[in-house]
Amino acid sequence: MNELCYSGAKYETIFEKIKTDKVMNQLVKRPEFKATYDNYIGGKFVAPIGGQYFDVVSPIDGKVFTRAAHSTKVDIDLAVDTAYEAFKTWGKTSVTERSILLNKIAQVIEDNLEYIATVETVDNGKAIRETLAADIPLAIDHFRYFASVIRAEESSIAELDSQTVSIALSEPLGVIAQIIPWNFPILMAVWKLAPALAAGNTVVLKPAESTPISILVLMELIGDILPPGVVNIVNGFGAELGRTLVTNKKVSKAAFTGSTPTGRLVMQYATENIIPVTLELGGKSPNIFLKSVGDADDDFFDKAVEGAVLFALNQGEICTCPSRLLIHEDIYEKFIARVIERTAAIKLGNPLDRTTMMGAQTSLVQKEKILSYIKLGKEEGAEILIGGAENHMEGDISGGYYIKPTLFKGNNKMRIFQEEIFGPVLAVTTFKTTEEAIAIANDTMYGLGAGVWTRDAHEIYQVPRAILAGRVWVNQYHSYPAGAPFGGYKQSGIGRENHKMMLGHYRQTKNMLISYDKKKLGFF
Image (cartoon, rainbow, N blue to C red; front, side):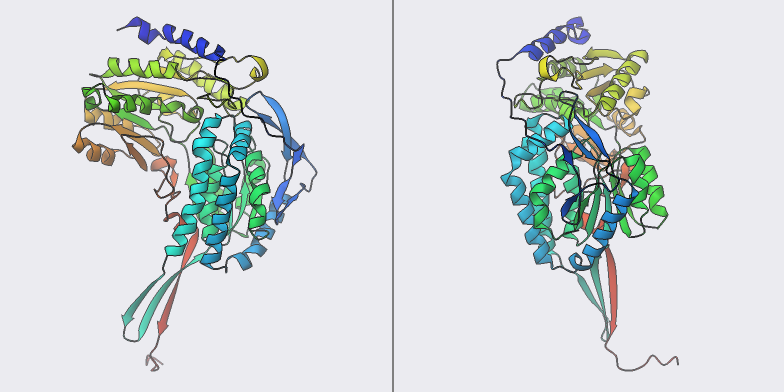
C-alpha cells in the first residue's frame, strides 16, 4: 500500500494551501436583512402574537444576522384558520388559473435568482455556486413542471353498462401542514408547495428553526401573486410547534422531510385525526463501484471519481448523500487514490465566494454532531484516509462552522457506516463479488438512495433492481429532476416527492356513479 496516498499527510498540506489561497476571490455581496422577520399569514407579514423572536445565526461566520418569529400554538391556529378559509375559494379555482400563477412564481424567482441564492447561502452556509447552479434553478423548474402537468391531466370515465356511468374525479384535500428541513430551505419548501398548490390545496408551512429566513424572503417576492391565505409561513421550534400543527383538526394532510426519529413522531401525530402523511426521511446511501469501472483510465473513470466525491456536495447535508463508498477490491487502490486526490482538491472557504466548492455546516449543533462521529470513527478503529478534523478558517469567517471532507476506511458493521451523519464524512469499504456488494448495500435500515457505477450492460439493470432503495442512480449521482419520483424504502419514508404522481398525495378521489335508468331496481 502506498503510505503517502493513504495516510492523508500529502493531502493535508494541499488543504492548507487551498485554505490560504486568495488568488481567486470572487465574493458575492452580502444582502441587507431586516432586523426581524415576522410570520407570513393571510397574504401579509404578521408579528407573533406572543411578541417573541429568536436569534438567527449565519453558519458562514457564526454571527447573528437577524431574528425570526418565535411562534406558539396561537400563531399556528391563526395560520390554519386562515388557510382553511382561503381553501373555500382556492380549492375551486380552475386548473388554468393555478397553472398561470405557478408560472408567474417561477418567473419572479428566475428574475431574482442571484439575490435569492445569496440569501440562502447566508441562511444555510452552503457554497453559493450550488445555490446559483442547483438549488434555485431546480426550484424554478419544479413550479414550471407542476404548472404544466396539471394542464394536461384528465379525469376518468367508464360506462359500466348501457345505463350506468362511473366518473373518477380528483379533488384537493384542504389545508396541508408542511414541515421542511434546513439543508435545502427553499428547494425543500418548493418540493412541497408546488404540487400542493397545483392540486388546489392551501398550506401552512413551518421552516426549520436554523434556516427560517430564506422562505420568508421568497414570500416577500412572490407573496402577492397568490390570493391571501393560500400559503402561510409560521416560524418557531419544531419541538414546540410540530404536534400542534399536525394535530389541528382543520389540517387534512401532513408532509414532512427530516430525520427518521422525527418522522415517526409526525406519523404518530397524524393518527390523532386520521390524516394521510408523506414522509421523506433519513438515508445511508451506498455508492457502488463495480470492477469494470477500472477497465480504462478515461472520461468515464474520471466521471466515476467525481461520483464518489459527490459525498461532499452540500457539505454532505443531503438525505441521499452517497455516504458509503463500496469499491471492488481489484480496483480499490487505483480508484481510492484518485478519490483522495480529488477530495483534497476541494476548495474550502467563504461560501459567498463563487470559487468555493464546499461551504459551512448549517449550525453549530450539526458541526458538533459531525465531529462526534469523526471521533467515533477513530474510536471504532476506522482508518482516516483524509480529513478527520474541523477546518479552522481565518478572518471574518473564523467563527463559522467548517469541517474538512473526511474519508474513513472500515467495515459496514461500524456505526459510521450504519448511522446517518449528515456531513462530509465518507465511509469506505471493499467487496469481492457483486452479490457481496448488494448485500452490503442492503445491510441498513434505510433505503432512500443508492448509486451504481459499471460499464457492464447487464449490471446496469440487474444491480439497481436488487438494491432496496427508492432511487438508484446509475453511472451518475445527485440529479433531482422534477419529473422523476423520489422517495424511500424501509425507514426512509412513505410516499414520493416530485413527478406527477405527487399530485395524488395531495388529492382524494371522488367517484360519481350515475344511473341513467328511469326504472326502479325492484327490491321495494
